[in-house]
Amino acid sequence: MIVITTPTGQIGGRLLDLLLGETPEPLRVIVRDPAKLPAAVRDRVDVVVGSHGDPDTVDRAFTGANAVFWLPPPAPSLSDTYSEFTRAAAKAFTVHGIDHVVGVSALGRGTPVADRAGLVTASLAMDDLIASTGVAYRALANPTFMDNLLWQAVSIRDDGVFTGTGAADRRAPLVATRDIAAAAARLLLDRSWTGTGEAAVLGPEDLSPNDLAHTMSDVLGRPVRYQRQTLDEFGAALAARGTGAALVRGYVDMMRAKDNGLDDAVPRTPQTASPTTFREWCAEVLAPAVSGQRSPE
Image 1 (cartoon, one colour):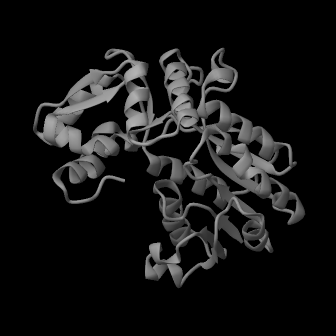
Image 2 (cartoon, rainbow, N blue to C red):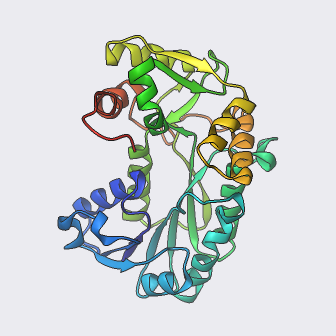
Image 3 (spheres, rainbow, N blue to C red):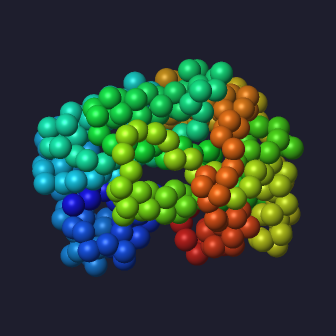
């Protein structure tokens, strides 16, 4: 049996769809609100209601399971991200003899800025906690998500502007969340791997904000330009949306580290590249969001 956390999220939901179509193995999900699962999905999986940060919930969910897909949800403060949330699950991996865990993490391990990269530093600490249990573990090491641009769909639609903190001409890897889900599915369907390690998912090419603007303009049929923010402006915008001070600092430190090469250390190879191009993602995901055919996630 495979247990899937965050089954209604961008990655967990896509992973659940993939596994339902590709394996006869029983699937179990942990979800706070089962009503958010499509009825057809609820009929095909075992549903454990609750938070996967709760000891009783993970104890119920991991009973009789062999493998787990692990992704902590967004946390209200940096102190809750990600190790503390994962601590109950890490104990339950051992208690219930879980063989394999696949987690969603970040690039940056071994870089000079990894120990002061905010949320990424917290994510790498979570990986270390899971690995310390002795379970076979693969951390999907990801750069920035293409899907993060959905948060700016209104600005792109109304003003033709998207923002970021990096230099306009600096290229970096970018990945679609659906490719992360596909990488997780491959690892969960073929569990012949052992030990602990990372599996990078880098997208097919490095792109700069100027490259993104050019592609968005072309696909959307309207001018889109990039506007660079200072880190102070980025932090102030987060705070204005009600983000707590510690979490704002975590985001700012992460973006500073990315601007200083956090995502640049892993080479792109046939094994680390993923297929979805930014142009494909724009046509299939961003364009419907901008046109109002789907809600930004």
